[in-house]
Length: 429
Image (cartoon, rainbow, N blue to C red; front, side, top):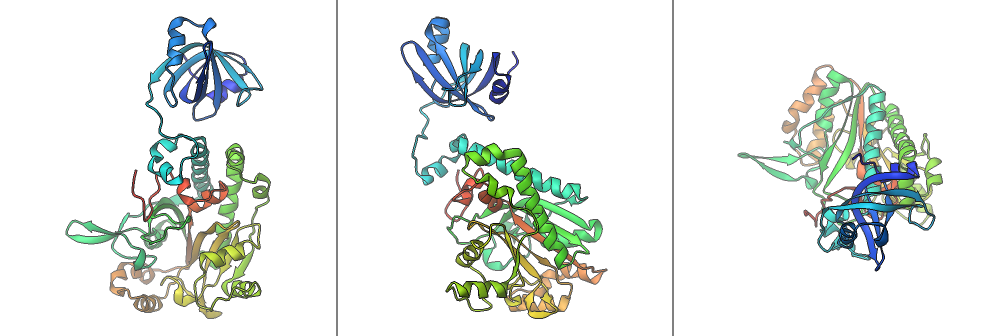
């Protein structure tokens, strides 16, 4: 017996089909059983009429419960009254796996759904999100692969900090201590002297004591490092990547985006180039709206949201104050109090989705910055070697995959962008 998906059955439109999946909904009467079957592609109504099937099949149909797994054979036809416009008149039905009383019912709390995430993944909402997630990963790889980049990887265990010691996860490593990686960047800067153009998609870890709707302790980052790239080059690469992801997801997941309530037409208008504005200009714009920020303070969520609402595209904020930036971000030679760095902020209040910069090649400047940040430069001697032996200008950035997914899927909370979220308050299931 050859089984086909629910979607292919609907495309066939008529005749006999064999499908399998899980019971999404069920209701019975004395003469009929209505089973909504779901698989990964779609849902469809399957009708068992007592008068048209054997007593054995009818009794089997009466045993069907929510989320039991089934194999069904029957005649498919159009029916506008059915949930997805098609109906199957069942001739044969087999329960493959029985189901206990399914714990998830309508109007459950977000925390209950997180406690039962292993089951909530079956929902149509999570199904749609995870399909978009898969497409975002595919788009990132296609973008870089088509441009001749090499996909490479770095250790998950790191002896040093990349983004600041306050968000490091400390791990016992035999008789020593290491940290879960915050970014592949320092290792990537060593690899570019061999491969020149590289990227990765890998998990990163930040021990931020934050309970906001935008933060995860374990998340996935798409990162790139490119030899010979100056500041303007990396800005263009970043905006081209985001524009490509949007285009790819629209081409492959329009149905899922509509199901999730996204404004498709608004997304279709987002194309590169994106608006660019300096940190100083952001402060000036916010001041007009009565939001006063002291120059030198980092932008918080409230300020990012306020400036993003002025644009329908992502915006690129450049030239943050050097003193609050990571040690590897160089001074702008035209304005030494600022750094050659940028953040990309998504519209609609979804916050920073990319952070990047040109990389400093001045060892002494980096040592000075490390000392000011309370770090020990001697821990980075291997990193400084990348500057001692044939240094070249280079740049890179990291894209927070889950933040992009949250934005594209019109989600209220980043925890819904990943199958099993890890946060300050959640480490299970």
